[in-house]
Image (cartoon, rainbow, N blue to C red):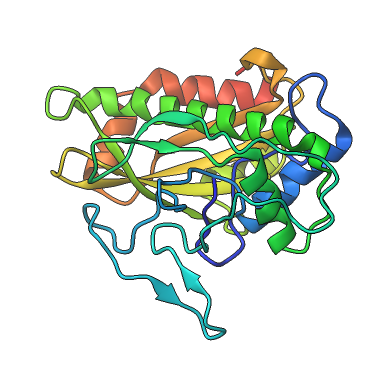
Length: 266
C-alpha cells in the first residue's frame, strides 16, 4: 500500500514469491516496495488508509517534514504523481483500480495506485525499477491487500450483528518489529520470519477501533489462488480483553494456523 509510518514499513510484497510468470526482477522490486512503504491504497487526493490517532477516522492537517515536504497524514507520503519520470523508457498505465475496502469516515472505497504512481514511488526511494514489470508488481500488491481484508472480515463476522460494515482507518508498516507469531515461526516453522508486517486499524461502526496484526510470509507451500507464494497471517492484536475472547471463539483457526506453519497448505 502506498503508506508507511516513516519507519520503513511498507506493502505486503514478497521478495521471492509471486504469481507464476513473475520475473525475479519483479519479485525483487516487490520486496523493495515492502521495505520502503511505496505501495498501497491511494485515496482520491493521492493518499492511503492512514490516519493520525487511534480513534475513529477524523480529518488531520498535512504533515510538513524538516525539508519542507508535505505529507498526507493518512499515509505519511507525498502525493504520488501520474507523470512519466525523466528517462522512463516505457509508457505506464495511469489507471487505478478500486479496492473492495471501505474507507473509514467516507462513503467510498480505497483506490489502488496506478503503475505510473508505483513506479514514481520506487524512484522516490532511489530504487531502480523496471517499468515493464510494473503491471505485474501492482497486480501482486492489489491481490495481496484484497486477501488481507478478507482475512480481517473473517474475524469481523464475529461482530456482524453489532457492525455489519467495518471500515479501514489506517495501517502502520512495522517490517522490523517481529510479532509473537513471527518469533514462533522463526523458531519452529519452515517459513522463517515474515518479509513484512502491518498493523491495520479497523473502525467497528464507530463503536471502537480494533488493531489487527498481519504477518506476510514467503511460502513455497502456499495454496493461495493464482499460485501467489505468500501466506497472510492476520489476527486481532492481543491488546484487549475483547481480542482475547475473539481468539477463543475461533479455536480451529489456531489449530489450522499452527498446522500450516509446520506443514504448509494454508
